[in-house]
Image 1 (cartoon, rainbow, N blue to C red):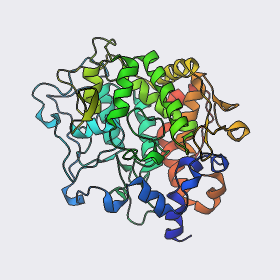
Image 2: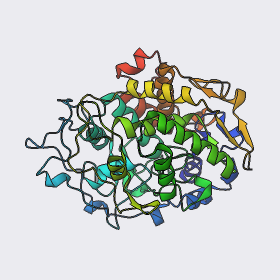
Image 3: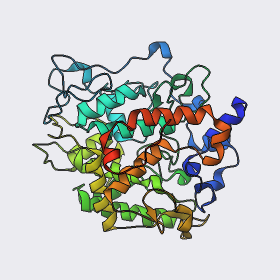
Length: 428
């Protein structure tokens, strides 16, 4: 297969990530006039992406003997995952806040933007597996299995599993890909329906373009603040996510809500599990801390972006690691409080079609609803990470499938959480 043809295939968004998605109404299929048109709508083509020349790329600032944080280095588990550590530590100038410059990539994930602004991952926004693992553990005391799952999904879906590099925002293929890579365009996490998806907490739906789906939307953040009354806890976030689901149904004719929305629930849980200023494992998810991580500045009755997501002053991470099993338990609680249907609008607002039988065969999906069994959540995360290639293309893509699957399985299969959950593990 020619590289041009392969690039075209791999530019399709995650509506085709599972074999059945391409036939589901509302699965963004109306945008598929061409891969180039889709990329243009996303605004994340290489031509429009901030460019820091590779020779000027500076890796993340490493931990040191003076500032060891939780001891995560070189992509390995933290050696001392006992938190309540001040981040950044007083005197650690290497991890002080530095706002993004014109050549620095930022994207839809406040956590990754924060990590880059503090040099826990590369400040230019082109990062890799080891940096992602170290940053999540040292900043937030994310458990190694959670950190690995998120990093593997991010790199596998939006980056390059050969180099293990990814962009935290727009298309930086020339800096993330291997020479002669078969992987085509690597769109970064701006890419729609991969990490970024409709009903985001603070980003517009892709097709609404207000102004896009990857920059801060002050109106949505104000809606979240008002709905939660400034307490971004679990029940309050369920209320806000319910509101966003109804809003997208009513306003977005191409609204799509597929199995990967489990990632949105995980992201919402981070506001109350990772972002508070902790004493032990208790911390208030209030505006001071959440607003800082989102770069949100209150201005009258609304919010504006203040120029850079930042770790709050004198902030301390959680005492014990947040594991993938912990996030699964939160998902089960949150989804059971408001079990909305998977599916999408069929080209018109308020014209929602559930997946129905189309979702059969996807882990934890029955009758267009997600399972509230935490083990099913864990296994769906595994499936997302390892099967993000349509089955009808696997024979044609050959080495591509092997590279993606090998990257995912080599990093995930050894984690006990997936075996304990009873997941069916793939072999590369």
